[in-house]
Image 1: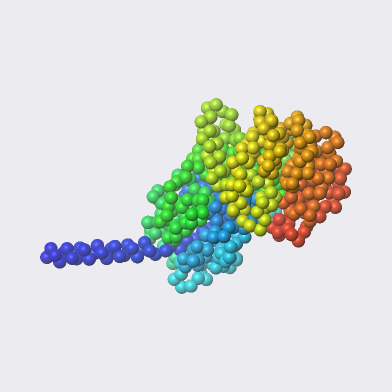
Image 2: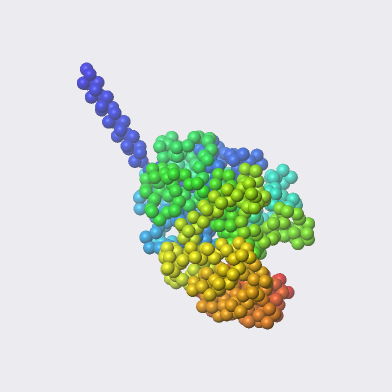
Length: 620
């Protein structure tokens, strides 16, 4: 009897083991529901003004992530981090609507899923700053759906809703559903009817999107797939309002992230998964690609810089999340940010440029227009004035006590330890990812013609990042004690070092520029167009009267995209725009500049015309 019972017991154990092995080998379907320009403004996140019943119900069945970052505060570089699992600056793809190559052997994550047998669909937006390395999707269109797969085939499907996009906030006419009198305004926005209307319409659009998300979830249920499918919901970056979108604050990077794992696949859930729960783990978009591969049982490739937070290959939690801002449409800037569970730190590498540079698309928003008008009329007080003024080199905010990020603690003695820790984290990130943003965009392309910028970034001979970053940090700090070092850098063998040395003198203003005026005049003939342009801007703005004419000639010449290409032209036109009335004498030559050329990628077509029109408008 014992033997029989023993055999029965062993047989039962073996059967259970086989069943468990079969379950573990089954691959889940994966559904991503995404939307545009949406912060964590959902009822599930405690926002009582929001009306999001469908997503709130999903959160009750699943789990929300308290701190999820999009890495970039605008769609194209944010989506670049998602599709590649690599930080956009490491790929040279951080500039809005750029188009760069991926290196050989590097694929987009749906390609790995398709190789493993998944049916992969995207409905509908792509908007990567990367050329696709072959076929990426089984279907990417407004008709793409898991229902088009082969019978029994596992699927990965994305449905992206544009209802909440920035452009839909300013769409008129619109009858408000949310009461604008009840909206909570961030401390940096003025309290005007226009601002309240825009915020209320933003919430209206979220409610509309919530219904669209609910319809996709109902389709999943109708198809009997809710128990076979892991569901993600997230926004692609922060709200489409100014000082959220395009800025790597928490307000521009923090997004909602809800994950539902059905009981059948609970073994793939993170250790802290609990229905209706809140995860404290820090996650960001660069983590999404390795996570979805991990859920499918695919080991993430070594080149991916993110960390899987679910599935077979889940990795330890990171201590920090990272954000970045580069060219936003037609305007250049360079900001890097980092946050932990409580603090966010920003380093502004172009502090002489105001936050609110004139980006034509952003200025279509009523909030942007009224905000600037009130500032120019002198009717605002801090912190509502900051957006229209030059930036500090460093910013540090305590998100627990200051969620709107308006009280800069970078100079607080009590927070010196926090500042140093965040500084170190950012420095390590920049160097470890080989951040190509420290090259001017035109210079980056000139150093790697016809090849992937990522390969340039990994080549320490062609891209001596440590030396370049050292000068960039000193340049952006604005501290007078580094002026002599910057002057010495004007004759460095590396053009990027020369560029940052000139920019550092420009940041310091007239005294520093005139101190080095002879060397700057020589740089008007530098081999690098980017160095020539920044030297011309510095001398035209702060040099002697006799410097203006030759500097204008340099800038006008380089503004010709038919001769120098679109990146050089954008740099030159930005410099011309900084001269204000000093460029009035050449207004007709600016008007005659070419505005299009066959060499310009369609994604970049609008930027040169926008800059020319803005310059002419200001000079007339």
